[in-house]
Length: 212
Image 1 (cartoon, rainbow, N blue to C red):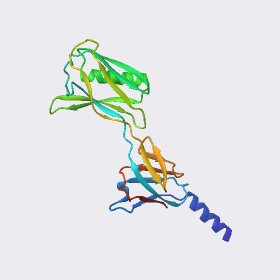
Image 2: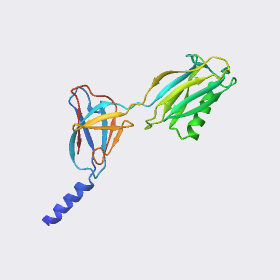
Image 3: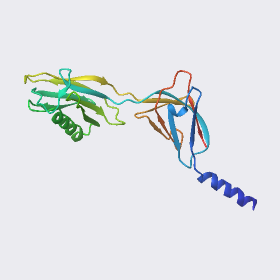
Image 4: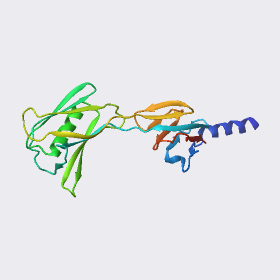
């Protein structure tokens, strides 16, 4: 009976539900900085996590002559948008009767056909009847891009890029060991544990993650 009871207890421990509890030595709630989950097979443990840097995708905003596009109006400019990604240059032709919407569609076709890991997002402000095109790397993509406009003698105002943000990886320390990720999710840094980071720690603060 004694051995059977020990076996039952061991089996219950292996298959019992695990959860991760996060606390911080800073003021406030530890889950302001990160949350964590654990699969049921995860070993009970505790470790410290310090969030040094959050991941940020490459992105930038396209306009015309450093201003927004007007909704559904022809751009009345001609030339080529040149995007250099991972050392390769891709051109998107712009013609006089293009609109912000059609340019966005052309960009997305180029991104998809060449498997570039980027997307063009059309942002509309109905209050001012204007639009911008955001070029943004998809989640987890580490590529940056270089933008150029070539009017090719076509005339009109140039397509311009503003608020260009370069890619930045996420970086944490787990019990003093540095770990990086292309996204703000860290999987299996500790076996069976997924960590999602949301806020950077101050100099002397960190979180304790307990797997229970």
